[in-house]
Length: 232
Image (cartoon, rainbow, N blue to C red):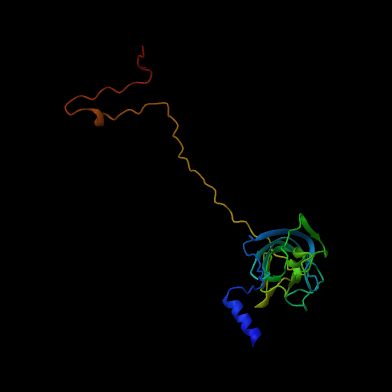
């Protein structure tokens, strides 16, 4: 009881010192790291090889948390004979190239701040996995993540389209179908119709006496061939 009273007295007197609690500094601006990939095999059976650029945006949150968002943009080339991603029973028929776009988000726990890697490029399979992608930016910090969620990737050729989404699953398929080349729309040409200029006949039309003779006067004599006007 005495001990409790002593503590109470100390609190009342303002003499009790409590240990300081450290919180993460949330004033750090978001950073963006950039990486490029070439001949990167698609997950699963490797139905395509991707060449693309990835932007990774990292934003600090309270209590040692970090919000991470990735955005991909580039091209893919299908691999003939591999099972298609939309239906594993269908094999890729031909080598075709299309466009890809994708994005995903993570939450990372780390006591240390991230740093970007200069000139970050990966060829083939030597890149960190997409599921744990942001952890390599937190090297030495004991960082962890539960994985990518949500995520969304879109693949498109001229005649095929496939979407892979963490919520809706996979819709459509890329089977290596050879798409017909688009037919160019003909551009109408401007044609100018010119009215031909009549060529001169070389003779001056002679008015009819009935048209040029005033009433009551004799008609003027009709010029005879060979009577040329005097010009000077």
